[in-house]
Length: 111
Image 1 (cartoon, rainbow, N blue to C red):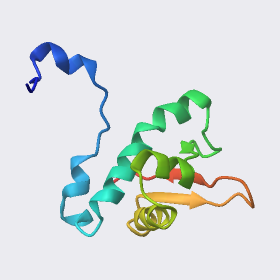
Image 2: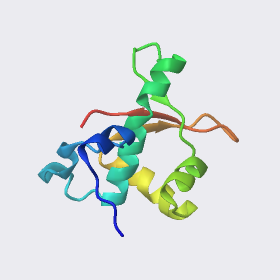
Image 3: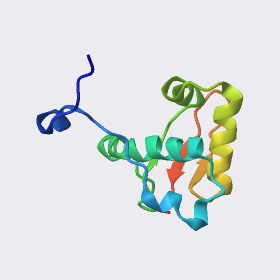
Image 4: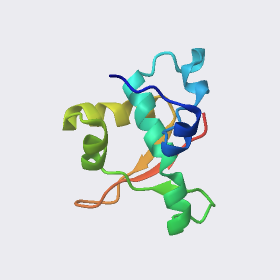
């Protein structure tokens, strides 16, 4: 027997938000998977602020490793790398490499 959602059930769930703007003409070439990754990154912004990860220019940054993205989205290494590159090419993120063994700093750009 299927259980249907009731009004009282709505408060029991947390959601990832993917901005509607990413589904407009400007971002039509961005894959749905890349849009989902952007939604995950957007969700993590509150952690960055909480951790004080703000640069000298007042920009919030975050760390989200390829491995973490693989665990969340259940894709392989190559696919995740492609999605990050897609977000960079679409001007939705900026990644700064820190050096060997350290995760890249990720700046989320406004859409």
